[in-house]
Length: 162
Image 1 (tube, rainbow, N blue to C red):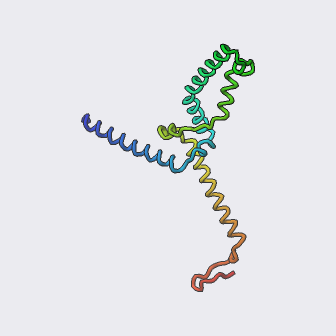
Image 2: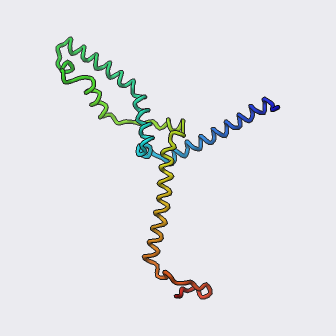
């Protein structure tokens, strides 16, 4: 029957190695990928946009409160700016939303590195394709520029011959 202390110790060691592994994954993501890489991958872009919208819901509520207060003020003072039929909250929100530079937070990927897996897979595919293209270019360059193509090499004389 295993000792309870051994089981707890093994769990602690296992958790420490998981923390080290996670820290390595986070460092890999920070070193290799930029915000543009995350935005170029469809799945990670979707996650970033959802996180941005979730974090900015408070902004929308505050803007709506501002709009309602301004609307009340305009109605009380007979000022036609916000009381105009053509100006409503959705139009104001869309104008502001289009002119705000979105700042995405990559911490969702650093906290849970599994979410960045589609980007890593895409990066691996790109590297494999790049290696194949590089080999093809080397072969094409050899075929175009090599003087001794198809000749054998004599190691004793250190010369090519037909």
